Image (cartoon, rainbow, N blue to C red):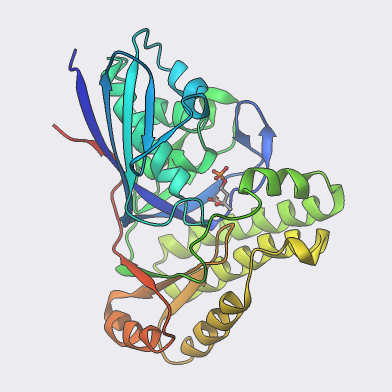
Length: 309
Ligand code: PMV
């Protein structure tokens, strides 16, 4: 049994969003979601046996209780020290919990000697943060609905040559977590039903568009699905909106660029806009984005998380 394990996990951004739970304890979703894994927004986590339980996130000691339930899934009976570093803003709608729980799950799987295969491990990681199970694979990943062991993630084996430009509209922690917000939306039966029915259509159209390498349709569906999710929030109360003025300006700017270049955008539960652009148009679009004078992160696509040898 090795005493120190280091794992890497990329973030992922959903093109078809996970937005609501079938079972709130097991974190099984009401429907399938589909994401793209982003290599350059990532977490590196080191776990080791220690004299006491410790959880250090971005060099700051945290309450171990935050991750205690998750750690207990791996049947580790000794004290452990967890040191984890995100290379991008934490809890700002950039899926830091996804890369975080994925890296921790990969490392604990190795430390505990459970040695679950990736699909099985995805059902454990899902219980930390639902969308985290998609960071195990890449670039296109499906997380399917199902009962506990059947709600796992897997690779959707197609490739589109594209990159992401994440435009930072606010890098502070979001006020309402996606977990809380999806519960709020799910409690409104009518609004939730609209979301679910439309998302099912988006999902199947997206599978076909990716399979056909139809970049324009992928973009249109992804934009529609992102706005569908954000509209579900705004329909409850416009004051709950995750968007700020910069978000709205970047959306307009990106829509305008769609007349000239092959690109689209999506937005998770936060204010930041993720622009996907074909490799061919990438340099020109990046030059355009620079004129916004906002911070941005460029990312290529990833094949998913792994443990270092
Ligand atoms: O995995 P959670 O509980 O952080 O929820 C993620 C929800 C969204 O990011 C908004 C959508 C998604 O599919 O990632």
